[in-house]
Image (cartoon, rainbow, N blue to C red; front, side):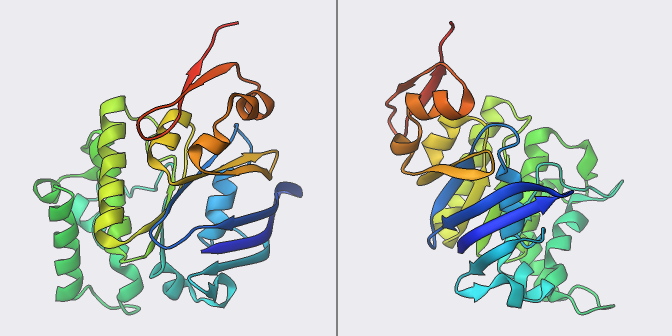
Length: 253
């Protein structure tokens, strides 16, 4: 996907200014930046969930030229706090991912059910199918949210803070799962993250937003520098080379 000069204004306030972004097929790009930088705004614009000026293309097709169902077959979004209908079972929630393929006033087909059961099995969720989603743990719910997105059959996966409120064990579980699915299914992944060490560990490239503008972009080691983090986060940190990416450690004054 590609974005050119994307600007978003919310409540008469410009939140995102002239953002350019490219994500290659099969690539994992993570957007980082301080609170209020415009990370979620950029992600939602790419997903077609916010009005914008500029241009966004999904695999060569302008997003403005795609109908809602067509867009949903190309891009799946997992927001920070997905809406969960009260009492809905895991199976029924994941089945919502097949909505773009179900005719208006129609019902799911055998093929839709096969896709959903295949995704549940792939994410080790088959045993949870009849259980109310709201009763699952945070890590289990996050896997279900991913399952719904995968059931859409989309090529581009947008994840807004996918590890928020998860402990470190469940963070690793979710991110390893995303990385494995990316390799196995050829998914393209665009995420936002607050944890800089985790972002550098998993992403192929990072995009640093600050004040609604892109301040830096490149490989994790190029973006996660002590100078960048001091300038845009106002943080005192030490950046330590890691096996897969830089590790960012706060330093006391």
